[in-house]
Image (cartoon, rainbow, N blue to C red; front, side):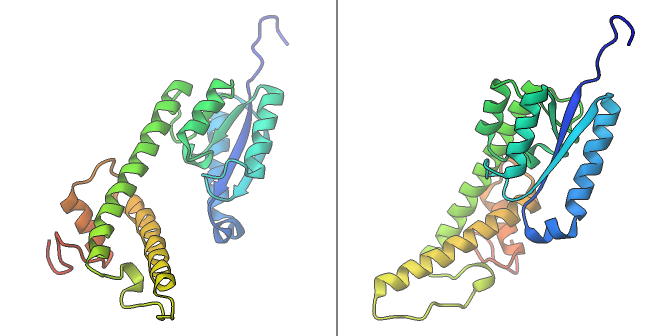
Length: 218
């Protein structure tokens, strides 16, 4: 090696999918891995290890994630993912990693440094919170009118001798539907903020009637 020559930076790749079906097919993981390898090659870095998880991005105890972090700390390597949310969906987790000295890069944001990634993660988390709040507000109106939401429209849990237990069952079913609709709207809109009318249109497009719009018109 020539005197003064720079040693190529080391990198660790991390991929993640949320469902077992995606993990078994390999398609989601393969696409992420191709993106990671291309990014690392473009930077002139050396890929030393690859890890993957089939789990939620909110789970910070994923084995692949933890192994990747350990290798990065051991080798002073950069943690690289196809997208930032493949590493974690928690802004505070990302901020803590950066503060601890773990360098992170996302292949879909090649020009973003650690500071920019921290800001982006905070904005993405805020967007998810806003979507969740607006979705719950709209669904609360429908629940107050006695509506059964989403794909379970028309379903009622069997009434038992304990009315309280039946009410709890209905609330649990509604909460599950709320969670599903939250994920679907987040995928469909990609917007940080949304007016009540826009949210109503999204819900109606998914077959959920609201007070602001009907399924026929908005």
